[in-house]
Length: 262
Picture 1 (cartoon, rainbow, N blue to C red):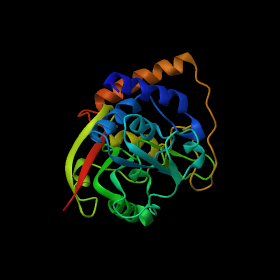
Picture 2: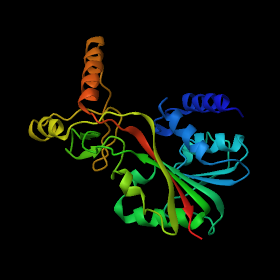
Picture 3: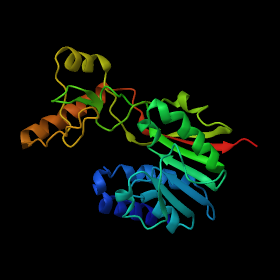
Picture 4: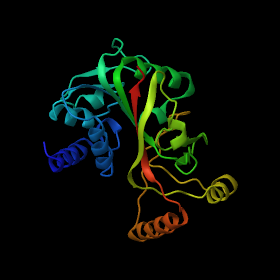
């Protein structure tokens, strides 16, 4: 499959599977999946996609000639996949040691609370025979990507993220593996200044609504908000201003590849 064909296949799956079982997929994700697939190298090789969601990377890897398997806790999301799949947690993978040549975990680690974070890293290392490929949000501001529940006033990430990663945090994540490569991928992101968020949210109590998100404390789901053309235009202007104010800019994700220490 040619690179242009890979990109078109990814874009097609993103369009078809966006919103499946509540999984948000964005056209920007095309660049993330492209980078991940390049990092896998050349087939044949066995690949385990941990936290595969709707299986975009898993299915494209399979079409490229990899022996790809997906794992996720959401059986409904995986139902749209073509590749083999297993319902399981990243903290308890149902495979023997060194079962897969390559283990992939894209946009997984930032969701893991402290009790299972270390277990998940150990499991990724255990089942990988040769390498592990990870992606995480790049220097994400958890404050800027948060909202407040209108019912119980719990403050939470609109993406369900509970931890952030910088480049220096990636070096010694996986036991028995060394960091072989790391780079920034994806579009440039907004980097909000913390003082603005502090005054607007903490002092004035003006937390932005996040329609469709669910509070992790009381499980209330925020409703949709009708937007006029004028509001949308103002929002674009503000986003442009915040983009300029957020210098220096960084790309959206960090992609790291680890090699087993022999």
